[in-house]
Length: 122
Image (cartoon, rainbow, N blue to C red; front, side, top):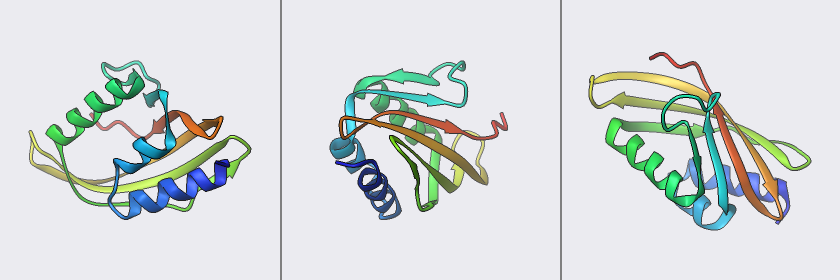
């Protein structure tokens, strides 16, 4: 699968609210996932087990009211997507809108790396 096809499928599934299908269909089992610089606890994970734990943490801590993915920008084996989310932080009850840029690397028809960049407001 070409990078632009992978990027388009990821965006379409995310905008349809299906966040599991990209992992099943588009991701390498050797996936690396990084939040910002990857230095905070849990901000750097490898493989599906790491992705699963990260997803469980997210679901425990945030209620997502809405989420929107932009059209992808593709450059060779890389693409980026802007995500905008309206969430409530469950422990504090604070609702906010945040945006992040996700950068993905594709090798051999699969996403092998994702990195998310956003302002960490604490």
